[in-house]
Image 1 (cartoon, rainbow, N blue to C red):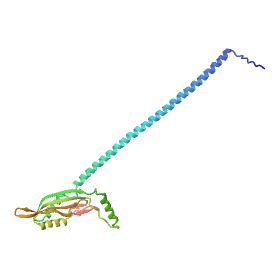
Image 2: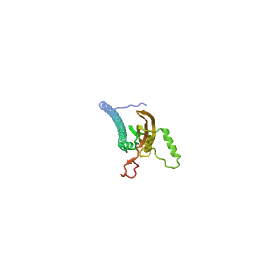
Image 3: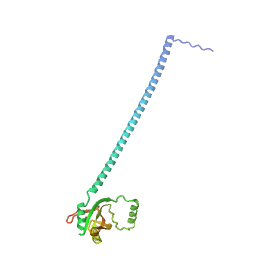
Image 4: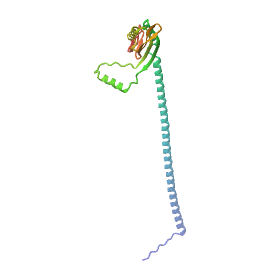
Length: 232
């Protein structure tokens, strides 16, 4: 059995239908291509903005880090400068007048002694060795609750050089210094006889310490409560 398909539409209408379908496909393809292009462009723009934001944050962090380092370096330099100033101040603003020490020493010297040289030098033993610190901690631990006096960390070393008529005058000077505040650790470091025209004398050198971690007050004056003091 044979079938026959008869197309009753004119060829003009059929051609128009094919052209309309072709245009519709073209418009759909163009729309799909435009959507893809717009999507890719939007995605690329978004990624570019994100990368730019990350770069800006990284630059800000780098700049801030360098500024923080500069601030830390400046603070460290200021701290070192302040330490130098305080060190100089500690050596200039002493708790005892040097003129008072000189006057006291010359007043205590026996009649048959003379002064040839007097040296005052500020010293500090705060930079003690680790072994000494360990020994001190061990001594405190074995004290069983007993009070342990704190060692003087700053002192003035006094060196007295001169001549005495004999050993008796020299040891009298040593005894007077040892019994007079604020002198401490009085020691005769040198004592030798020398010949002078017509007699013999003793050339001596006496060393002692003056603690500087206390507040010295003159007799008759008062000091604020809670301040460690030592009478002159």
